[in-house]
Image 1: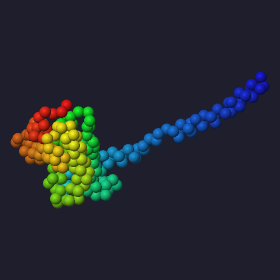
Image 2: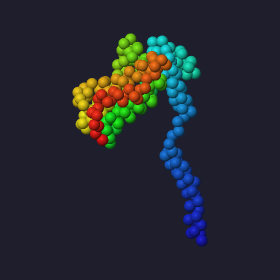
Image 3: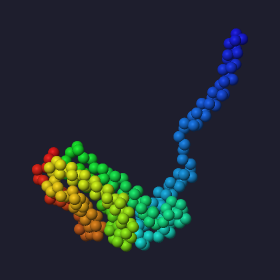
Image 4: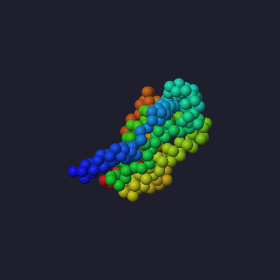
Length: 234
């Protein structure tokens, strides 16, 4: 009995240390939660980007003032400089935020499981739904109208958006040529011809959408009929 009590005594003495070690291990492995300060900074950054999008699409790049962005975002002007060094940096970030996910999909088209035409139509439908008639289209129109005045913006937009979109279209064209769907293999040298109607739609809807709204899907079907062979591969 004395021996058993001795064992029990040692076990009881070890329990606090074992519990402390367990709690310490749990403390080490538990994922760190973002502080309220970090969450607040993230929310303020998102609010600044959203306000910048509203201001840039309403006024254009030249006329947009960071004072107005700050007022719309509900922050002090100095807060903007904690996240962005200047107006151009803010514009670049909102382009990445607004168009980045879409451009990722366009630059990496799903090929190999069906016709090239079906893949192009799917991407065009996505573009029409997520760009035309939204503030993303206003960004495109702003680049078109002010790109010559601010060549650094045009260069950035080409690098971040246009180049990736062109690369994705070229992949689809080459896929269509390999399947015998596309009549002229030279189209791969000028993928701009494939996306031209979408750019026209962005410009047209912005200028004349109220007077003569464009049926973008119908226009694209006619355009693709000119590019693809009548007897499409399946």
